[in-house]
Image (cartoon, rainbow, N blue to C red; front, side):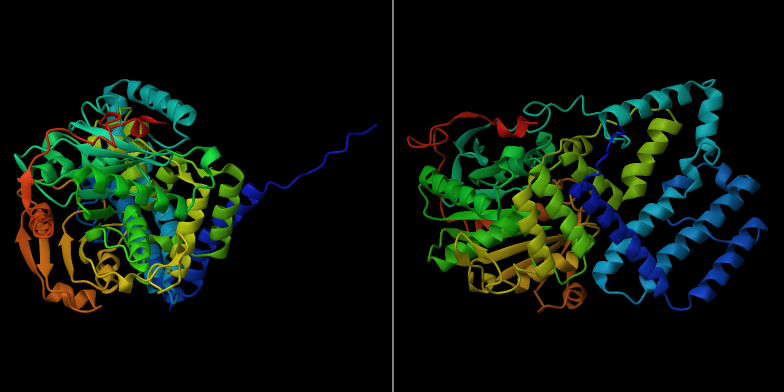
Length: 548
């Protein structure tokens, strides 16, 4: 009797396939709606022909490290290959930018175009990379042997992505995340770390840093001379930081309300420990979205425990184009919903891979060349090690965050309900301190600026140099550090920029002055951490940060 084979559709695979088609379809839509596409194609053909004939003058952009080998300029064949490739790369990018499409479609098209264009680079191949060829010749082929081993290792242990960093020297609680402190509160969702004060007096109002629900908090506490936590302590602030638990499949139903309730319980503990009926806050990245929702809830129930709020590279108003546009498509939204309902959580490696493909030259192909073509080991770098220390996201929370992004719920009065109350940020009268980063590829600074228009209190905006993470690790003493200040000028970010002035140094010092002015009087530093009711449970950086 013949076997009967039943084909059962995999909903996750179907949804992911639909998501891939949505991203690829966005690029196709962009090209179809690019004006003068036939003329552009002719111009590209002419530019490529000029490159082949040796008449092209096209050069790499400043900072493009792919073509630094002298052979790209001196060797006639390599020079022609480089110029022909650059012509194609720029033509693809220009077509997407000039297309008559909405901004979410453009974001998806940029994503697809970036992967396509960077993947075509000749430097990603052995014969197209003169540095790799020289390395293979100089090592009698051993560089290729080592590269092959690295590739096999990444296929087996890193999901097929080239390893970005050697994390071996960076041990949490020792070489990173080592500022002294203790866990003074723990529930199922988070730990609260209270750090040991370093001054003889402290301000009465404590500071709670609400770190993002994605990734781990010790980016705020790298080496001592690069630690935001250590700097805040030096300013006489009582510093508490959230450390979120790494959820497993059994926690797939943890949603925005779950995290909001956990954060509220934590603020109760901090008020009791410090003896203050108010706390100051800073919400960073996705932690800013959670903090904003909790503040609105507290305002709705008549609770004024939040004295002030800082928001660092956290976008609350989604009308400004940003990478969230990648998910603003029914197929992508459906893919995320189906996948998380099936798996319970979003795997941290998948999140890391997505963020890497947002910057493919820097975070994918650079490592591809280094690890495989050159046969070298991944570099040792604390920020990259932190970035590689991935965490999961509960499925329910991810779905809530996607709904917020798709429907701009935080910026819409009463558009979102948290813990049974409507969210209206305009009713929140606490002062806010908002930081954007000039080259942030996740939260454009214009999007961060929009936060100044959402709350009812006075707002200050700072534009820091650097990118999404680099601006956070921004200690005093860096001669290249700078930031811009200026009066908030309505909803027009360009007008704010025109009226701003550049300051040398780190925004940390400006933030400290602003924060201390809202942190009450000074009093003698408590002799011990925690309280009788909330006794220390564990040494910093705690247990949850180590969970894999």
